[in-house]
Image 1 (cartoon, rainbow, N blue to C red):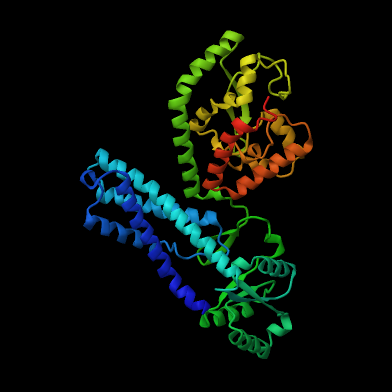
Image 2 (tube, rainbow, N blue to C red; image 1 turned 180 degrees about the horizontal axis):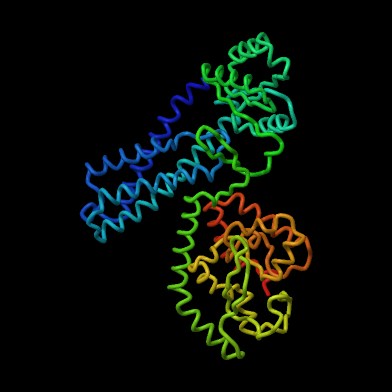
Length: 455
């Protein structure tokens, strides 16, 4: 029963995907006007596009979901597949771009993203619920006892939605491993109890591991090796291949992946370019005039701050204080006499940070990332804060996870900087484009709703 489900699921998944694609094409055609004004693909091209979508999703194995997959990994798969599809559509259907086709192409991309996302997340949630009720399960055993094995047992007990039923331990010590009778008994029990997954824990006997893998291959059982305690680092481990040798990449982060880095940089360029053209083009002259009318000094406050890999860059802000000698070492405090009237408004609304979109265009900063600190402050924090410099593995941001969680402005107590660093570290280790978008929306909401510590 449980294996029959997995035989049918890929076909049902692809069929549902194709149905959503067809609906998206029809909806786009409906939204853009009457059949007389229709500028979408004709029937023959339409069928080709449906086949293209099927080929892309099947080749990329979009239907293959790990039981422990998270929603962000499904989104990442969808984005890449959708990009491939839209590129092929553009090459085949739009060699001669006109206004109607360009509009259809853009609306189609948006509609496809919205409805396929909704479809796939719905299937994901339904499947999780289905498994939590005891259906579509897998039987699993752990070979070898140890603390990490116990933690895995606890996780499998709590996360019923994984659909992995823990059947118990088989304790293989060195003497038992060399006993052919003991090994044969395990093989017989594994077949009898219909074991689907074997987790190997703290077994270092290469002969035994080879025998287990050979047996599993013959009986369609998955084998997974649990990393030892020293590798349980709350990180996503990845692997590199050197010929026939595999090594574990212990401290790789999502933005080490060139696709992720490219996606984030593209988002930064597009977003900051739009802000520069449509907002900064008139804001800089207007705000600059107000700053000059109130006090003498430059329009911009330019301060050296630490960026990626601790490289120092010049961070831009609208000047919000009278010129002083303490800007690098003394934080702004409530009712700070250095802050001008126009500066108080700029700081209250965070508009003083707007010129940093130019820093993003120049490549020194990102839209979202750990907030950069002045160089002296950065040096002081790094001397006593554990993992502080890990926040410099990526570009600093105009906004960040710590800021939308309320840790912004003046640092009065040690817990405030510790909380910032902890949240920055989490962001670096778990980056996704969806986290960036979420932080951007929350930042916009915060500007209008929550302004504590903004002075």
